[in-house]
Length: 114
Image (cartoon, rainbow, N blue to C red; front, side, top):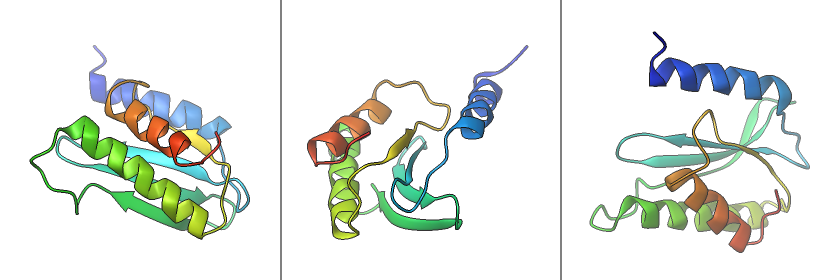
């Protein structure tokens, strides 16, 4: 029987074969743990991370979906500072729902184009 974690990893590898980021259009990768959410803008050609945002500095008293929305806004600001306007969204095998969707919507509202 395939577990939820193994299913996510299969999807992650399948999508990573097709999705790649460049310096002009980096890959926006989302990682979701039980407590935190992390977002990176990655240039896959040079293997460098261009910008990072996470919920580590955000207070834990607000709901996780609101934390995710703040992280999406933070990554949009950091991308603007780095001169990045368009990204390729990599949901990292997670369903496009809940916190992952909140990050994407907040980044779009912040000015990033997917």
